[in-house]
Length: 167
Ligand SMILES: [Cu+2]
Image 1 (cartoon, helix red, strand yellow):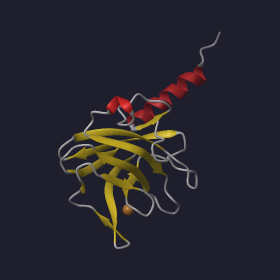
Image 2 (cartoon, helix red, strand yellow; image 1 turned 90 degrees about the vertical axis):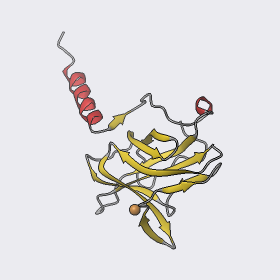
Image 3 (cartoon, protein in one colour; image 1 turned 90 degrees about the horizontal axis):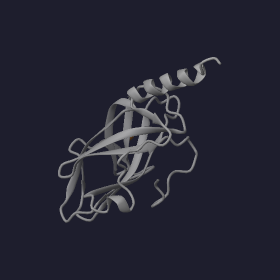
Image 4 (tube, rainbow, N blue to C red; image 1 turned 135 degrees about the vertical axis):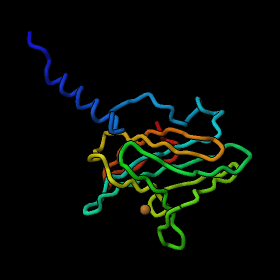
Protein backbone atom coordinates (compact mmCIF):
# COMPACT_ATOMS: atom_id res chain seq x y z
CA UNK A 1 0.00 0.00 0.00
CA UNK A 2 1.14 3.49 -0.77
CA UNK A 3 1.04 6.15 1.82
CA UNK A 4 -2.03 8.34 1.54
CA UNK A 5 -0.03 11.27 0.29
CA UNK A 6 -2.98 13.48 -0.64
CA UNK A 7 -4.25 13.24 2.92
CA UNK A 8 -0.84 14.14 4.28
CA UNK A 9 -0.64 17.11 1.95
CA UNK A 10 -4.10 18.24 2.99
CA UNK A 11 -3.05 18.03 6.61
CA UNK A 12 0.00 20.16 5.93
CA UNK A 13 -2.14 22.76 4.23
CA UNK A 14 -4.47 22.75 7.19
CA UNK A 15 -1.53 23.41 9.48
CA UNK A 16 -0.42 26.31 7.34
CA UNK A 17 -3.90 27.74 7.32
CA UNK A 18 -4.07 27.32 11.06
CA UNK A 19 -0.84 29.22 11.50
CA UNK A 20 -2.45 32.09 9.63
CA UNK A 21 -5.36 31.98 12.02
CA UNK A 22 -7.81 30.43 9.64
CA UNK A 23 -9.23 27.16 10.77
CA UNK A 24 -11.49 24.76 8.94
CA UNK A 25 -14.43 22.82 10.18
CA UNK A 26 -15.45 22.25 13.73
CA UNK A 27 -12.87 23.67 16.07
CA UNK A 28 -13.31 23.48 19.80
CA UNK A 29 -13.36 27.14 20.73
CA UNK A 30 -14.77 28.88 23.73
CA UNK A 31 -17.58 30.51 21.83
CA UNK A 32 -19.69 32.42 24.26
CA UNK A 33 -23.16 31.24 23.42
CA UNK A 34 -25.85 29.06 24.83
CA UNK A 35 -26.11 27.55 28.26
CA UNK A 36 -22.51 26.62 28.93
CA UNK A 37 -21.52 30.25 29.22
CA UNK A 38 -24.45 31.48 31.27
CA UNK A 39 -22.07 32.96 33.81
CA UNK A 40 -19.94 34.76 31.23
CA UNK A 41 -19.90 38.55 31.67
CA UNK A 42 -19.96 39.03 27.91
CA UNK A 43 -21.82 36.83 25.45
CA UNK A 44 -21.00 37.05 21.76
CA UNK A 45 -23.41 35.59 19.21
CA UNK A 46 -24.08 35.67 15.49
CA UNK A 47 -20.45 36.18 14.53
CA UNK A 48 -19.64 35.90 10.85
CA UNK A 49 -17.23 37.30 8.31
CA UNK A 50 -17.96 38.53 4.81
CA UNK A 51 -15.16 38.18 2.27
CA UNK A 52 -14.10 41.29 0.33
CA UNK A 53 -16.42 42.69 -2.32
CA UNK A 54 -14.12 43.13 -5.33
CA UNK A 55 -12.28 45.34 -5.98
CA UNK A 56 -12.16 45.96 -2.23
CA UNK A 57 -9.52 43.97 -0.40
CA UNK A 58 -11.01 44.32 3.04
CA UNK A 59 -13.28 41.84 4.75
CA UNK A 60 -15.85 42.66 7.40
CA UNK A 61 -16.69 40.86 10.62
CA UNK A 62 -20.07 41.14 12.30
CA UNK A 63 -21.30 39.97 15.68
CA UNK A 64 -23.62 40.74 18.54
CA UNK A 65 -22.27 41.46 22.02
CA UNK A 66 -24.44 41.15 25.10
CA UNK A 67 -23.19 42.61 28.37
CA UNK A 68 -24.70 40.43 31.09
CA UNK A 69 -23.21 42.47 33.91
CA UNK A 70 -24.59 45.40 35.86
CA UNK A 71 -21.70 47.60 34.74
CA UNK A 72 -20.97 49.23 31.42
CA UNK A 73 -18.15 47.59 29.54
CA UNK A 74 -16.17 48.78 26.54
CA UNK A 75 -15.09 46.79 23.52
CA UNK A 76 -11.66 48.35 23.19
CA UNK A 77 -10.06 46.39 20.35
CA UNK A 78 -10.38 43.45 18.02
CA UNK A 79 -7.67 41.31 16.52
CA UNK A 80 -8.06 38.47 14.05
CA UNK A 81 -6.11 35.64 12.52
CA UNK A 82 -7.49 36.58 9.11
CA UNK A 83 -5.63 39.83 8.56
CA UNK A 84 -2.94 42.09 9.93
CA UNK A 85 -5.26 44.94 10.79
CA UNK A 86 -8.72 44.93 12.33
CA UNK A 87 -10.52 48.21 12.93
CA UNK A 88 -13.79 48.64 14.76
CA UNK A 89 -16.06 50.81 12.64
CA UNK A 90 -19.37 52.24 13.66
CA UNK A 91 -21.86 54.21 11.61
CA UNK A 92 -22.46 57.73 12.88
CA UNK A 93 -24.99 59.83 10.97
CA UNK A 94 -24.60 57.54 7.99
CA UNK A 95 -20.84 57.83 7.93
CA UNK A 96 -18.39 55.06 8.79
CA UNK A 97 -16.01 56.12 11.53
CA UNK A 98 -13.25 54.28 13.35
CA UNK A 99 -14.18 53.80 16.98
CA UNK A 100 -10.79 54.90 18.27
CA UNK A 101 -11.86 54.78 21.89
CA UNK A 102 -13.85 51.60 21.56
CA UNK A 103 -17.57 51.08 21.86
CA UNK A 104 -19.42 51.10 25.17
CA UNK A 105 -21.87 48.28 25.80
CA UNK A 106 -24.22 49.47 28.54
CA UNK A 107 -24.99 47.31 31.55
CA UNK A 108 -27.37 44.58 30.38
CA UNK A 109 -27.13 46.17 26.95
CA UNK A 110 -26.35 44.90 23.49
CA UNK A 111 -24.03 46.00 20.71
CA UNK A 112 -25.11 44.78 17.29
CA UNK A 113 -22.66 44.98 14.43
CA UNK A 114 -24.58 44.18 11.25
CA UNK A 115 -24.82 45.39 7.68
CA UNK A 116 -25.24 49.16 7.78
CA UNK A 117 -24.76 49.12 11.52
CA UNK A 118 -21.02 48.86 11.96
CA UNK A 119 -18.44 46.14 11.55
CA UNK A 120 -14.89 45.17 12.18
CA UNK A 121 -12.98 45.94 9.01
CA UNK A 122 -10.24 43.41 8.37
CA UNK A 123 -7.39 44.71 6.26
CA UNK A 124 -4.19 43.19 4.87
CA UNK A 125 -5.75 39.74 4.65
CA UNK A 126 -3.38 36.81 5.09
CA UNK A 127 -5.22 34.78 2.47
CA UNK A 128 -8.48 34.29 0.65
CA UNK A 129 -11.57 33.90 2.77
CA UNK A 130 -13.68 31.02 1.54
CA UNK A 131 -17.08 29.81 2.70
CA UNK A 132 -16.61 26.87 5.06
CA UNK A 133 -13.62 28.45 6.74
CA UNK A 134 -13.70 29.93 10.18
CA UNK A 135 -11.95 33.05 11.32
CA UNK A 136 -10.70 33.61 14.82
CA UNK A 137 -11.54 36.95 16.39
CA UNK A 138 -10.26 38.15 19.72
CA UNK A 139 -12.43 40.83 21.26
CA UNK A 140 -10.88 42.71 24.16
CA UNK A 141 -13.12 44.34 26.74
CA UNK A 142 -12.08 46.87 29.37
CA UNK A 143 -13.68 44.86 32.17
CA UNK A 144 -14.21 41.35 30.83
CA UNK A 145 -10.81 41.07 29.15
CA UNK A 146 -10.16 39.12 25.96
CA UNK A 147 -12.80 36.84 24.49
CA UNK A 148 -12.09 34.57 21.55
CA UNK A 149 -14.83 34.04 19.00
CA UNK A 150 -14.93 31.77 15.96
CA UNK A 151 -16.72 33.34 13.02
CA UNK A 152 -17.69 31.40 9.90
CA UNK A 153 -17.00 32.90 6.50
CA UNK A 154 -20.33 33.55 4.82
CA UNK A 155 -20.33 34.00 1.05
CA UNK A 156 -21.44 37.31 -0.38
CA UNK A 157 -25.19 37.20 -0.79
CA UNK A 158 -25.65 34.11 1.37
CA UNK A 159 -27.87 34.31 4.47
CA UNK A 160 -26.17 35.24 7.70
CA UNK A 161 -26.53 33.62 11.11
CA UNK A 162 -29.84 34.69 12.60
CA UNK A 163 -30.43 35.82 16.13
CA UNK A 164 -30.00 33.00 18.57
CA UNK A 165 -29.00 30.54 15.89
CA UNK A 166 -25.28 30.43 16.54
CA UNK A 167 -23.60 27.09 16.83
CU1 LIG B 1 -15.49 49.97 7.80
